[in-house]
Length: 394
Image (cartoon, rainbow, N blue to C red; front, top):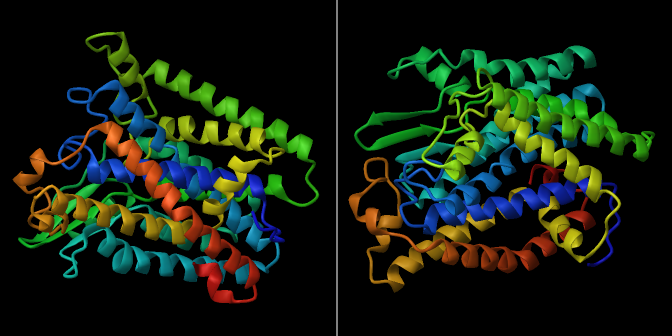
């Protein structure tokens, strides 16, 4: 890798890069696997252990990315006044919401009429940044407590559900209930990332940034990472074992031992439950503890994606969706089915669409390798042009 001077913390970028690479697997599965448009890969009635695992490992991506977005905000703010940081978080949050609506929806659907709008992870990051822009004015202890309350306490709200398309219902969908809104016969809006727990997670990530201050002892940091990582995983097993609180869907004994284990790990992502966040953030913290002193070809590879995540995100979705469209053409199918509309997203012809999981993994590896040189060039460009303020928004 070309030597580029950077003040960025490599272990954080490596973890972010790993999350971005794994994330691509989930998105390739979305566009290429048998039944992916109709069947939930964690539905124990229809899934297989390998399909479940393929989905489960990608659960780590969104939590790690949003948590680290909070950490990056703390590190960015260490060189700014609180007012400057607040302004940056507010404007970048608004910018990300715009990108979600205008750009991300277009590359996910290829629908220039925008009759099918999806509010996903970029939207959640944007809203969380806007919330954080105000919350950073709180004392650090109060901010830490706020993050814990939002993450650990939001499952108390699971029993509150809304229906219909009233203003109050829409606000609740945004905050805590995943929902589809059929606004008109041709206009569908899907709120996939209710934001309360994501805001809490970003707040905790911001507080976590304290461990990466310049004067913090690396050995002490590693101890903290190990304690927090193992503690989060242990708490996951305790809460999941008790099976009373922490997830919208309790686990249950299934037809055999393997599927009972799958039920135990079948945690809720939308919105992310307490146990979901424990079993994803816990391993991420352990990874940070282990990877910090490591420097090799693999970490250099991951580092590239971790330093240009937004660029890579949009590029990989364009490539994956384009490959799926051309795949339809090569198979003699109607390529227009890969243009998703508000009234035809679940068209019956897609019931027979898809490829084996082995093909999904092969395409995933190909996409990641294809995008590496482009991501690396952009990373070098950003590093050489740090004086250009607009690059911090990309």
